[in-house]
Every structure is written in C-alpha cells, then in structure tokens.
Image 1 (cartoon, rainbow, N blue to C red):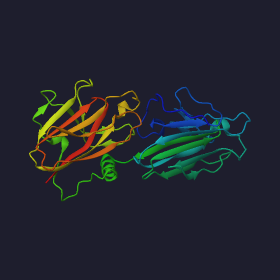
Image 2 (image 1 turned 180 degrees about the vertical axis):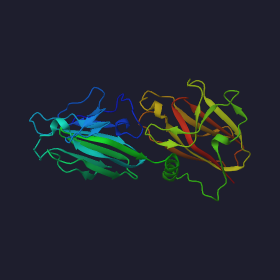
Image 3 (image 1 turned 90 degrees about the vertical axis):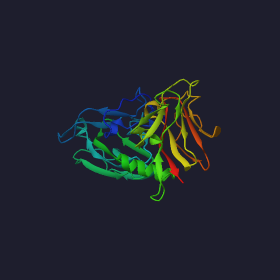
Image 4 (image 1 turned 180 degrees about the horizontal axis):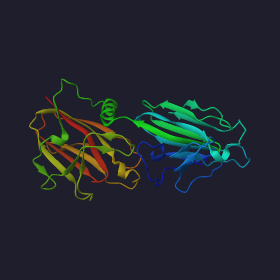
Length: 317
C-alpha cells in the first residue's frame, strides 16, 4: 500500500469526520488524491432507497484485477474523543449490486480490530454504528469497494474542554491536589519582561497540533530567534515547584524547519531547563521545575506563533 502524509486539507466542521486531520492514507491500488487523502468527500449522498444525506465519505481504491479495492486513513486523535458514530449506506448508483463478497467498512483503534460492517449489497438497509473512542490514540478507517458504499453523517463526539484538560493533567501527572495551594502561571505577577506590556500573550484556550485543547496557556510575542520573549518573576521562595506542558500550536502543525523554537527556564539567573526544539511531530512535553529557595524565576519562549506553555502552575509551599 502506498502511504501519504497529511498535506493541505481544509477543515469543514469540527464534529464532522471530513474535518479530522489524517496522519497517513493509502489504497491497495496506489491511487491517491492530489492532497494525499484516500477518501472522496461528498457534499451530498443518496442511498439505494433514495434517502438523501448532507455529506458523506467514499473510497477511491480499486485493484487492477477488478477485486474490491481498499482505501484507508489513519487519524492521530490522542484520546480527544468519546465516540464516533455514523451510518453506512449503499450508494444509489450502485443499488443493483448483488455481489456480497467484497464491500464493507472496517475500523481499528490503536491497531486493534473493533468493528466490521456486514457486507453491503443490493437491498441492504442503512447500518448505523457507534464506536467507543475512550483513550484511543490512533483511529483507522478502511472502506472496501470504490463507488459502492458511503459513510454518511459521520460525527466525532469530542471531550469537553474541561474533560480534555482533566485528562491531559492526569496523563502528564501535573494534577494539583486539593491540598496543594497553587497559582496559574498566567496569573503570576511579573516585574520585568521583554516588552513594557509583558513578554507573553495569555490565552484562555490553546489547541495543539494533535487537536488537544487546553484551558489556559502563554505564548511569546516576538518571532525573531535573536529576541527572546521573557518574563521574570519575584517569587521570593514562596513556591516549591513549577509544572506545565510545552506544545506545538495547531496553526503551526506542518512547520518542520524550526531550529530555534524552544522554552528555557532560569532560577536565580541559572539555566535549569531547556526544552528540545519544538517542531512537527514532537509530542507535548511535560516539565516540573524545583523552586525550593528560588527568589527569581525567568521563563523564555523562542518562537511566538509556534509554541505554547499550557497548564502552567506554581505550587505554594
């Protein structure tokens, strides 16, 4: 099978499968769309009974020996969704197809088989499906049979922002217990910064390149690698720890040439942490910095529109 990475697909609707960014795609025949997808996206579909649907997806693969071709796409969803649901129908133009040996839908979660539809043929009723996506990181959808069957009205049910933040905090082990007094990094007063208005933008919500959302975050103002974005804080030994996560922003998800995009943290003038360079394919990076007896904290962000520090908190002693 030929594989193609995601190129420049334009999203439609956040809950519509057609808007979900794929990471890999392929067909048994090697045929592929110009944008790297293995599916055809339809603005309207009519099934074999004449029912109409507002949108749908079909495969493009067809083997040279005339056997049913397979078209598949993989999606790195990283646990961001609760479930996927939709309907499988026989296309109106294929309503007379009687061969029952080759046309179906198959779904894998984290490379484990979880669903295969019945064979679709003339007279087949629409088939509704719902797949649990709890904690699923990699979703694969495979359509067997070009121009025969469609997945229609397919929706992804996402975790709420609060659910995603709670889940992410648990995964990164930065959950703050009720007994720990803390302050959000966005709210920590600074005394010196790279501009008179501060060195960072504060974001009420952030979306990383994998589609994960976070309730708060900071990002730099300057893009110039020679001009670091920074803020300095007089914490006067009041805190025991700094926790957070560094992510690549969603709008920079296809940026690969970023040699000077990173986060640095200083305690009393000494460099105590520097992240790897953040670029396409780099997973979110959680960090924890000891602040015991630290008087002054400095945070630098290189690359304003590229990276965000999310879920940042300082833990009080």
